[in-house]
Length: 596
Image (tube, rainbow, N blue to C red; front, side, top):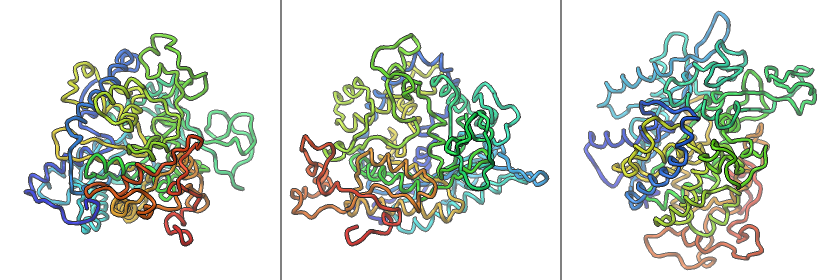
């Protein structure tokens, strides 16, 4: 069974495998789903890109279809997986007892990749990638790990190797801890704040990665939204918190004219506060399309659990906050929704009010309940049970669903792909609109796929490669030590194998998963919160469902496609296999009573 950790079934020459794997790892990078996303070019301003929005959305769907036709039968029996760790480069000011960001990320990245080129014959290499902040770099193993049990023992050593090589490339006085964020960034307004890109009260534009894509993202999110992003976190209150009323600028954290502790907030106003957070992500290659959709769904449910377990973000802008995770900060930092989409104005299905709205997704008027960075909103597996549990009201463009279904894509997958296109592309490059060949490039699809920052990302194989269908787990926060990051990564790998080997089902209503995310962000959620969870993860006994399918199919397929309550009066499936209750994280991880 492909789920088992075992030796690979095939052998290739080391040089050929190395080339393929370097290509695979490059495609694993969160910031570079394909190399084209960080291409050299001139991004359009939001006003310039607006006439092209409909074209990019429409042809993004067509590019997915072209890829899907080419690779939907692609199969990779061997497990390949990899982790991604983001690092913040900081500089220590011993004289003034300060720590600040060091804007040498691109310089350090280039130096590291040049050094790696000199060590291509070694099997233990690393690869370094761009990140949003000019003070950030991302590191991955050069080659993905495989299905050998011994590969699990290489994870921590590779993370340590990345850290050593990064530290060796730093200047005197620089450090690169794996902290989720620099807690004091923006506490004192930076020199040059209020620039034309971020227009921030607190941070300057020069902290953004110099690649033009990142500045365009920042400006176009603001332009589509109609104002600066507005990030507000509750301030942590204890006996040491200063008394009094605080000003509305957010510099002291409390809104003007309010002395009620419940009104205390820490305010931020730039994409850098969110996308400047670092994290730990893990990507898995699956056997085939079906397995990737099933594994996507199970790990989707696990997202808030791992967020709470890894929570490591207790302070922003020099203040302790009453939450523990980065999640809401990033969500608010990239929230490009218009006032109507956010529910601040009356949302409507009527046509556009002006030419500016004509090309926008939903004409900028349909209610969107989530930011672009959010928990995943749909299960992918196509049987009755998962689809019955998709209980959120998410607008999905019907024309794109029809296009996909008319081309042979099943409804569940069509709904997922189409849901990506209820957003607008944020970066459109000059000369790369109608000039892009839909049968040769996935640039327009990737433009939307890469800026729907969901808790799980489902990735089709790149055309022309032997890479398989992949799923990316995106909720874990960075830990201070390589041991901890390695432990969480290997735990996730082992759990994914257990899910596939023992036919485990984690399905909950999507609304319950969303509520788990809300609970996961709370302070000390790992100790104090309870989460919705299934009472039984293992499949029911054979006599409880129809006979198991024939050899070659998945056992859980018979469960998912037959075990849903079809009572029209029931608002949610009520079959016993869908029962859930609230559990602490200790109970979820260690068991509860004699039934879980």
